[in-house]
Length: 260
Image (cartoon, rainbow, N blue to C red; front, side, top):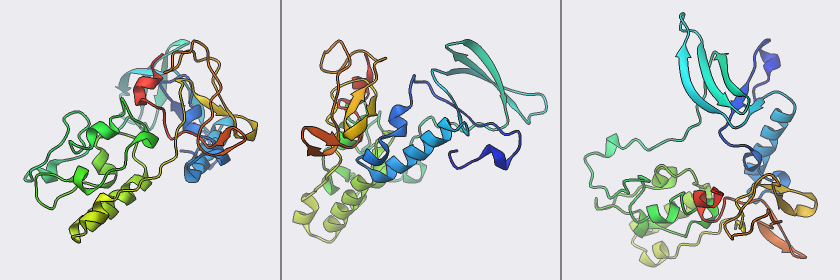
């Protein structure tokens, strides 16, 4: 969406509706992001919103989708802080998560967690209720194996329904599996995964300030450590005079940390 300019199609409007009250974490830390490529994407998205190319709506709950008579348009019924709104649109792009398609694996003996739909031994390590991208422990062939001999699920698919996969994790998964298949048990077991540390102990949404320092959103109260007021936090990698540069890969304690 960030690459689409309404000027390319006169009369075109792009609206972005989210359930949360803020998209600061989606924007990321820009040049200070611990993952540079993610920082670039976030910066481009922020520019698109601030320039008006994308119209942002927060705290939106969609209660109904009503196709119009001719079928060419859809009326979106939304609950917002301003009350119920009805919006007629041509196209809806729903970013609501995903789950793996396991149909092609029905004839294989699998050991999958019923909730996360990831390999049973991996699921507790990546469960988004308790973990974020940067808090996942190193894991390799032994964790990704299934009862079907020689069969592994690696990469984003190994995470099942968990939305916290990072490419760096997948690279190390594949290296470990390759070593296992080559008969090098020691190399397969020597899993080394270096992810950006979060260093976050707050439910508040961090905003990057000058000098790499980050502060929590003053509108959000409460933290996973029991403080009643938002507290400044430092995150990322590369400590300099007490400040750590970067942006959190996620929050400690996963989704549970975001509950006031």
